[in-house]
Length: 133
Image (cartoon, rainbow, N blue to C red; front, top):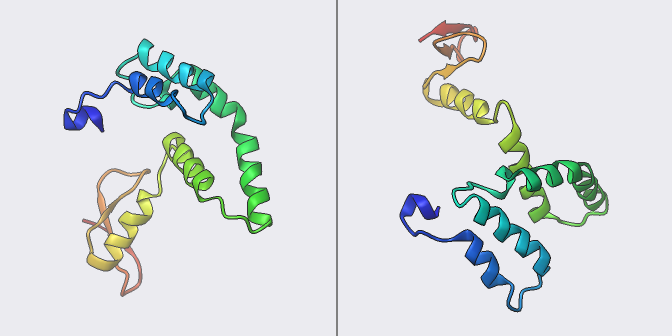
């Protein structure tokens, strides 16, 4: 974001600007500002120890809210996307492995495995054996 494009945006200051007339509780915005004031290079609030601990402690309830919404047929795309993002940040392995497999299937682009070194290709149209690329 800001650093990548050279915008030099002070995220702590942005949270202070939001206070004026914003429906987000002022105390919460103060905490955001404090986190960025303490660490101006903070890549995400989830990298702040306090925020990370609070989100971790609340994640079971967060999941229950989504379960309840789904059971009642209530769309909750913001909650669902945010939870998926949170899970992806903490995942040891990401769904990119599926993309590697699809690319190999459609264009023989090969894939890497987590249990062996090297690049591999599956003979999808034949016996589906795996060959070293």
